[in-house]
Image (cartoon, rainbow over all chains, first blue to last red; front, side, top):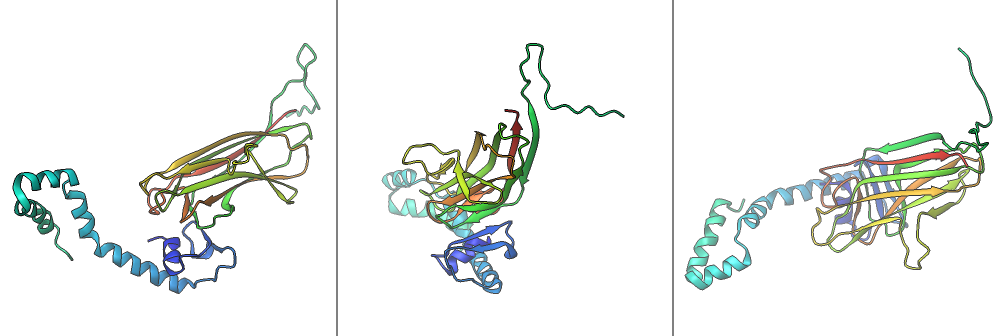
Length: 96
Length: 169
């Protein structure tokens, strides 16, 4: 997770620039209050954990049929048929 | 070894030959991100040159490998600036239209991994023999503007260059 994403997660209104992904090359603009390196590092770890924890969601999303195909599935096979199709992907990528 | 020094070389018709007198270039290999909606310097993407004559022109060639934005529907803008003798900066390479806001820009459609590249070729007439610094600045239309990388991740970086050539006037 990059530095500026962590800064914006802490302060959504922050006006800031980051060069070379370097904690020592952060420029705060327009009177934005400085956020300590420790707080930025902690937020980066938090964001990375949330990202990693959601990996199963990204894998499921990539494999689910398109909305059009799902509607077609419901039309031809009913809700139970559609549910069986979706379950295959959910079982393949269980929630962590 | 011999050294030949002349002020001017002319062709047989008595016309002065034009040529490139000097070339200076900077390559930025690191990434840059900003949430600023006002132009800020892209760290390290600048170059200085001192023309030998007030009649010289300076050809500025800029190539930004890629620029992106962290959110769909937002923009990233870049503008070329010139400062003489470390003085006030002047935005150059912009149109005279009232809506002109940048030298180059990219509009992110609906994928945060989309990027655009900026290419600027501008022939400047600085009319000075003082040191000139050309700097590329950027800003976002919102969210996070990114230079030398995608908007959604620090992965997949590129490089950007700014090259200036003094052309004999």
